[in-house]
Image (tube, rainbow, N blue to C red; front, side, top):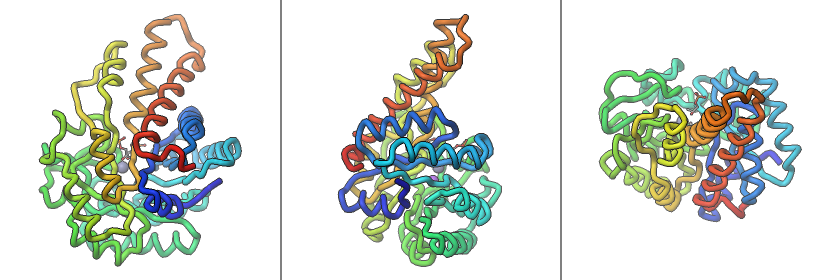
Length: 328
Ligand code: G3H
Ligand code: 13P
Ligand code: NA
Ligand code: ZN
């Protein structure tokens, strides 16, 4: 059954677990995530970006979610808009049956220019007012995602960068977080502490200088009942890099967010953990493998099924690691 983000994260806080929010763009990813949720008895957050909505078509996406909920009526499903950029994007997501929206006012509507605090408060307030009328939850974001190593902030699509940002912009200010949550009434708050979207987060195993988990602890001390969200939380596992490179891919050496750091976050108020890149890598590795080993193969099911299975395996692992398993 469909539930809101607020309902799900309240339960997660009460029972001290985290919930992975997996991005989906198509049927294969939807089926793979739900198979993992079913196998581990987990509630699940499915999230679609603006890019996913454009790729799949809003109508197809809405009917896909209907289908997934109908196949697995016993699984609590939150359908969330990832990185909404303005009021209209959030409003249309609600029309299509999303039970939660993210208004990312840390960036202007272009998705790459850092916005000032007042802009963020105003646009997020507009969305919470509307969404709460409709019984839909809202995630806000304070602080710009980006690398503390390079000072590169990033576009919400993970592809562009908007100059060099200061540590102040790349780390959520705990005092400001208190004001922001009070002013906007968001149900969950995404914070910036050194993670970024995509595979290239860190050039070495991250330590506290580049992955500032202490910022999360500080915010949780001041906002003990606010549900915190970690974006850019793929772990970019070495074995998935290896499979891709073994079968003709060209990924440069890179590090993601260690699962132990996420588990530490879950002890300090982190309830929603956004993961897209790990699943992209899991699928791509298998597609490369099948096509390399069977160059005469041209039935998409022959490579999409192993891709789905690899994604299900990854999702099951995260459900177990975040203690979501058994909470469905
Ligand atoms: O925010 C980043 C997510 O991984 C979604 O990426 O905008 O390419 O769909 P996307
Ligand atoms: P990753 O690129 O680390 O998977 O992050 C996804 C994300 O934050 C989606 O909002
Ligand atoms: Na989101
Ligand atoms: Zn994100």
